Length: 189
Ligand code: AMP
Image 1 (cartoon, rainbow, N blue to C red):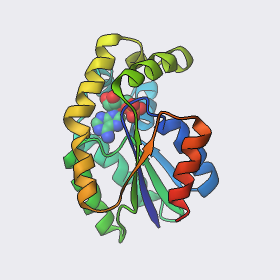
Image 2 (image 1 turned 60 degrees about the vertical axis):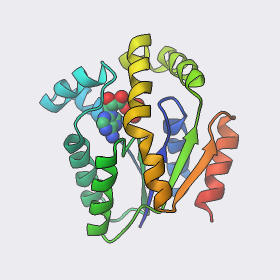
Image 3 (image 1 turned 60 degrees about the horizontal axis):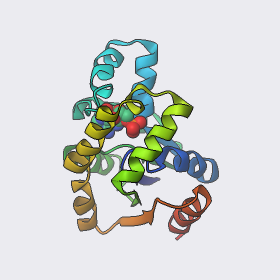
Image 4 (image 1 turned 45 degrees about the vertical axis):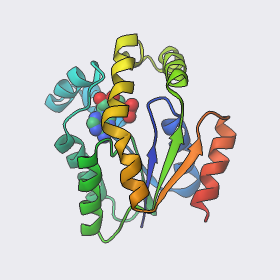
């Protein structure tokens, strides 16, 4: 069972690439953002609490997303692998994931990190807002908070995973096709 992390700032193209990867490799795509938006759409208690944080551009608590991921891993033992997208986003989540995977007899096989400079993050998110209509994509101050949160809480994971020797960087400022080809190159190794 393979476990891959698709990593990068908001707007780097993780969702777009994840869709293509799971189509080709038949991994299960686990996007914590998508799972949280499903809870919001269904109007669950969790969804209501998450909406407040998400619509400010803040992270939801580690335990919430860790619980979601654990449930999905535990209930899908017959897949070829998992592609995590937007998870982990903090060092605590990364440590929780390592512990979880050890329990399930696996490990993070590779971290596929899409790079993108901040000014392009803005551009991409504002463009996506017109297509997907996400509330957290429309307001400049929310986007700024998401970028600041990324630098503050999520970027330290780069050092964390470099230390584990399975961190791979891919230039995100390229065409969808070229980024996909670079990702497949790594996945096919
Ligand atoms: P995304 O779709 O990955 O951009 O996530 C949208 C929002 O959901 C984020 O800005 C966070 O508020 C929340 N979220 C998604 N994944 C996580 C996570 N792993 N940890 C905490 N919050 C998350």
